[in-house]
Length: 391
Image 1: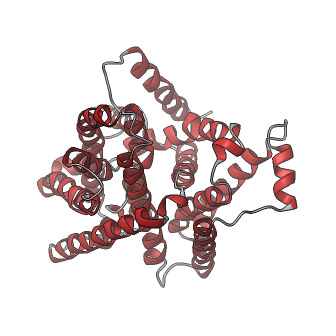
Image 2 (image 1 turned 180 degrees about the horizontal axis):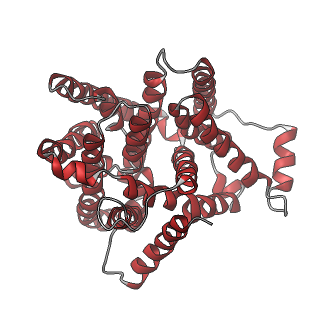
């Protein structure tokens, strides 16, 4: 057994207990896991250096995190007028990201395109709890915020999948990403049209889902683990296939809480109970904090990246100005600019493919940490008053 893994698992178990015992400490668990990882890692105390076992589980955790993020995207949100508003918002977001990329290229920053695409994503897993706490999930502000966040995440993954599959990527890796992308687009079309899916295999899976076979969970873990292996063998960008796989699963089963109520619970138990926390803690362990501190330019990039998040993801919320009041609009903009898990994924991909300077990557992650710490808290203060008036 790896001592480092035991310490990482201790942190993963201790963080939620701490947050539960000290409710006044209203911090996202992922944020605290990363911070503790930084403290016990080589950059500060040096208690833990990630070994092969920890890194392998962290890679699986990243794959599972992307899969869970994809499975949170309900494609039916993109129908009708809402879909058109979200499309306008996304076009503005992509345009703003292109401006950021242009500025970064002019400054000679490596990995400018990767950074620009990474800024498109919003952390759905962090936005949903805020809207739930405010009682706004069923309100127009909640529906618009979720649809806007989902569109950004899908666009970021598709653009990264296409953009990173360059000439030096193995042919098998490009074919895998192409197949998953085509399949995802096909499922999007079917979901938007409301086409029902029913096969003999589906019936067998449903019958075995809640027996000792736990077939749905086993197949999901196999799929995610296979994509993590593909990322190592075919090019690290293949890890993005996990998000597309989650998107496909949700498209095939758009109401898992109703059709298979235990499946999302089991999946979250495997992901958020074990694998995803290992990825977050390991991200803190490997964060180049010393490089960030030693290079003033990289440290100065933190507020610049934070401003870029507000520009790329916050400003496009203006597309919803006819549906929302001023306070709601500001809350949606802040929630859409909340991003961390996908930034971590993009930085991990950039490091593995030598596309991103470690100090710049640390600055990008630090900006994500600040967005998670500040933006949802401010949005939560804006939303309750709105909900009270509506109710």
